Image (cartoon, rainbow, N blue to C red):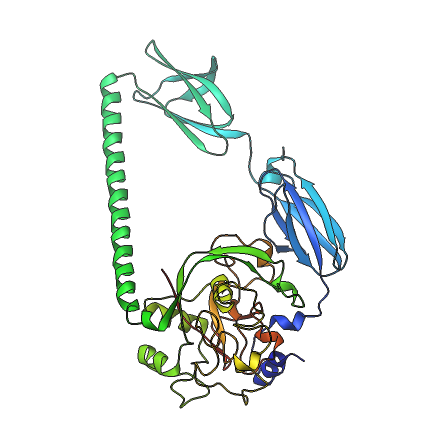
Length: 439
């Protein structure tokens, strides 16, 4: 039985653990769609967009409704039956809508504003007189494309070939008086120059602000560096490399990381209190035990005050596995008790940091003692689309990702590839954190 579930129910906490789904039945749906990137909705929930090469989604076996949408194209809907452990492929080729009501706007028309320095000029479009149209005027719903535009005033005719773009107000100007034309463009250049100078000044100010913040972070980080380990970057296969894990640990995929620093120990109660002014821990009066009962937001704020940040999920697993080695637990494949405080030896509480054997990088308690917040938003199917280089997790979500087992978890939940999630504004007596920093 999964101990997280027992503990969560007893504490009446809103917290979900991925191992609950260890026996869940899943199938796979591959959606190919075009033209370009197409929005995909499965059972009315928006998913990652799909394109011609295809996007794969994990779904429960059974019948699902799939809708493909793209602006100015006719939506399509299909029903699909998903079989357990099988990949089902469907395709959508959307066609452009010719009905403005279906697409939300006319896709082949634009408006044209004709302005002259002498009001009241007559307008001809492609040689035909625009009836009752004298400048200045806006002509609605012109077909997109090239137009021959003529304006006539007191016997003088000016001509311009102009391309009308769809779904926007297009503006064309004519000058009968060359001095007014020079004055207009001179003023326009002056305004554009002022805007450009303002933009450059704003960018320079932003750059100076970033540099000041980075320098402040570097200064704040210096006292912490002796307690951190420099992790040399590299590539490794991330995920359920030993088999027997659950679906959110798959597919196994290659990840490459830059060098980074990470704390040798989990942040302790005394360290947290020194920076944040209080100790929120459930297991109090143990200054060198890991701090817990701390939310993701508070963990992030602590690391920021220390000139650091939370590690990404990929950085965490790479560091836990001694630099991406084939390790089932942090530092070992078999003898977990020598490396971790977990349900078999913890006595149902946290312990002093650094008492167990460190992993190959000299990091302590990456398995056991407390689980650890990471930077990433949690997504159960993120590994299907994770980038290879320095992944940062999903772009949004409801939960943040927690890694590493804790004092109340069994061996399965202390595996280096195990992933679970927590609401970022909640705190738990089995979750703490450690900080990381970019080299």
